[in-house]
Length: 421
Image (cartoon, rainbow, N blue to C red; front, side, top):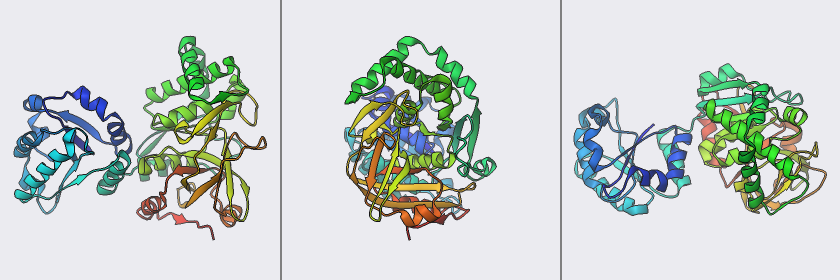
């Protein structure tokens, strides 16, 4: 997807990149958009060929760009664009800041006066991303996924056919030797790790078990994995985390919490199916997701728990040790009592899925379960005890059942929906 951002001569590219940093990043990550910024003073330096075709969308970043759009429109081969084989309307993005909506409305009227269709995508970042995905059909998983080590030994039904993944969805999988990570952890500068460890303490309500050394070692894992993700250009990754526990006497729980918030989708235990569920939640719903184990079931509720969660999902967090091992750093997060979507996409060829909406009724805490715990007001016994798609499921903030189901119904392999009853 190609998106051209228009700004007035009163502003700079740097202003646009800073002002719209989150939206631009999400357009790049979730819509695979290639972004170009253009202003009045640099339009003449543009490659003429690049201005002869209409981009997939024009983002109006500021007011005062109406004549700039008119100049660009004059260079477009409108006859070719409107040929029967290539019907196309003009999509404009304008969130309203910096007089952008006012300019977009003037341009929309100009298009109508010239016999051309157009529409404006307006709203919050979430609304803009959802509209762009729906309009341009780019809610794809395309990208690169890293697998640090192999799936955990107990995950005997959670892998994905990699050839199918590449051919069907354009997802490339990269194997990363855990020894490379271990060497990377050793190479992290102490000062950088100290800074990350202190920042996490500052963001948390309190620290329970982990010592300062524990926190610094967990920060080293974060910095080492983040570095490899950038080197390998990874959009997402999953890690055989218990090997890190055994080899390095620390955990990757903190790493996953931080990187999910930074836009790199991160899952644990080498569970590829759950990672793809999380990646789809990010691309389609614009949300980081909580990967969790169903832990307690009643006829009216389901409790799920895990030792890592995106910090952005939590009202507050406590720094704890990892539940099973009692070492390293894990996250005990307190989630808001609001609406969530429970989702899982699975099968070796992603041929099944489960999705339902529920409300959180409790954020309990028991020493018998992983550190972050949440109870949803839904009875999943009929599904989980008879037809469950593996162990881990993902919890997505908000109500996204219809969006996820619509995506599934559009897939060529026609995944089967498993329902509660």
